Image: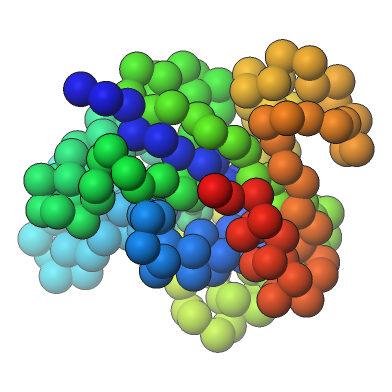
Amino acid sequence: MDKYKAFLIFGPNGIGKGTNAKAVGTLPGYFHFSTGDMFRALVARVKEGTASELELQIDEIMKSGRLVDDETTVRLTRHNLETAVAGGRIDQENDYLLLDGVPRNVEQARMLDPFIEVCGVLHITAAREVAVERITNRARIEGRKDDQDPVAVGKRLDIFFANLSPMLSYYDSGFDGSPDYDSQVIHYIDAAQRPTKVLLDVLACLP
Ligand code: AMP
């Protein structure tokens, strides 16, 4: 099997990663895949009382702001991508995936390697305070369950910032930890710009 060609979208929670990746994913030749959306769809049955043991566990983990285990995450990601190929939603030879929310750590990055060819990392940057403010607003507007608890929101951001440098070093071994490191692989996009400018910067990185 050929590997999927993919751009990875990195960035703290709440700063528009999903919005931009979703917008680009509406264009022919690109397919947006979000592990957060994948897990939210999976736990939808919890409310109806028909969820499996795994779905109940994932619901608890998401509410607490922790990460689902790496093996489950990568297995379900691969399975969902294969289902999209089989259903004709991904043309594996020609389409680029926009991977949003995965990998979350170096272990997941390693586990993706056998089936994902990384063409670039789009790092949408924002300070922690900006992310907290945006998530708080999103919680009010969209009512997303995993945004409601400030402790869980803080935990998600802690995990993101703790894993960021190791992941950037994984994809560019020359990465020196500095925010203005010049890379062929990592593209920095400032989330504080107007939303149209953020999207333009994302598009400028893509083939
Ligand atoms: P997100 O919408 O990307 O912030 O994801 C929402 C929640 O889903 C996270 O807080 C995690 O509990 C879970 N999740 C999403 N992606 C991953 C991943 N790559 N690894 C582990 N857990 C994940």
